[in-house]
Length: 457
Image 1 (cartoon, rainbow, N blue to C red):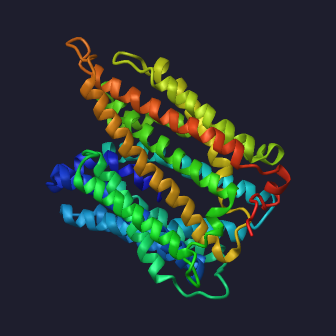
Image 2: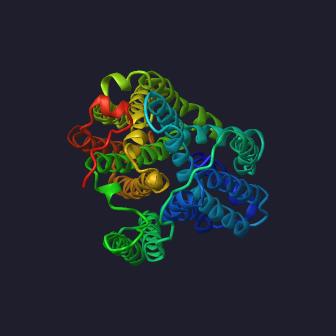
Image 3: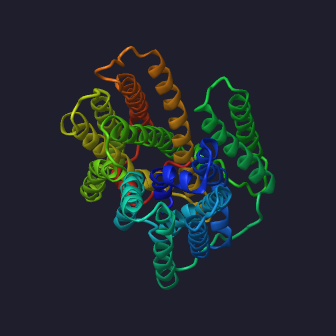
């Protein structure tokens, strides 16, 4: 649900804008508000799950997300839709880390833990592409409202299951909240996410520079404060661990490459290839399908080969797939120019997603499982925001300087922009290769035992 709502609304936006009478600027806030609330409140949501109870936080987060989705689906004005999207982000910030924390304490070690996190990573990785398909189906055959209302029945089923299946767990010891740290990181992450969302309009804008600078200061102050706080919001031992730190860096790069590439691939489908929203969603399925199929295979293999090989090979395959996609032309066919790169990109993504959650949460003390899961999700969320902003700037520059547009191929300039985006996403994946090899140095024995991280001090 959380990953799905990052993309499913994109398909519904044109119809929602027309029906609710929103301006182009207001329409953009439908996406930005969700990302802003979600990204800025994640660490607080993770700590609430640890201290208040993971099962309780999961249920409350799920219920709140469903109520907000219902309000958004029944919105009669742009303001009502914006309010709903903001509250979706708030409850997503509680729901996402609570879900990961539940997995962490339910499967503390062994092969079951490896499989559980592989399944979780697969669903999260494929969710963005599936959101595009589901958004297309619901918008074309029902109305845009159902892109939000669909969350309600899903949440009802999940809450009923959670009530009977999940066991409650919470951190022991000191459970006082780090209020100064919470304010600093919320301001810092919120400013970074918002700053990058404004960067799409120009890197030299005062608001872009100002919010990015404010975010950097907020995060720096937060890290300084965490070394002095009696009960820190994010104990620095979580991110100081070399293996976990490397995993977070890869999560940032993976989030940037995947969300950025999927956005511009969807634009290529609809603008250049003339596909409907539904056809565009169907055309995105091979990416999600290759993740799901590959992950099913890798979940049975990872215990034998260990995570280091997978998380190093994954970026290689993803980069190769993205470079294939960068060869798109205005008159190229889907089967020849899109499908091979899409499948290879998806296979590479699965190589990363299968070990990622396990590596990020291996060896975490039970009291820190919620905030550690939140840190991973925050890395992916910030990575996605950075990727979309940077790739949009590159795309705009490439289109402006392109000489490919002509009477015969009016989309030549756009395709030049898409190619640059895919190349930039490939570079992000290439940067991830040495990080995986040199930082994620984990033996397969430690990994399968659930102790995959080397802990400092």
